[in-house]
Image (cartoon, rainbow, N blue to C red):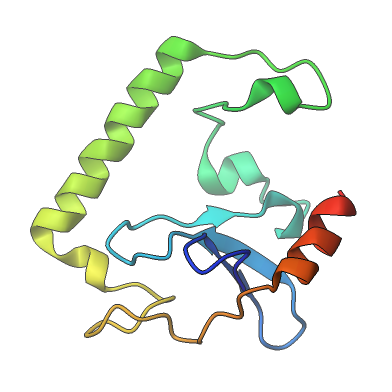
Length: 125
């Protein structure tokens, strides 16, 4: 699913329609944003599975006090850039569970919301 024909892709499980994560529309950027509220709670914890939070962004819209860490964000961003560049050079970005390896097209055709659907979804938030 996508909010527009150029926006991020949101992936859902085929069995129960549970949101899995968001990816860029272009498979050349090897990134998936996982939706933490859909991950299993309990053991192992999110920190045990993925490590501690390394970057905090968009803190003005947070529902509680969130400490912004600009220096940590820059360091983390540089590490992410290093990883992205390495996958591009090595070609490993092509092995992606959300996209067909040879063509880079999504494994499922994304459903792009109409303007009316987008308005309904964004006004409910």
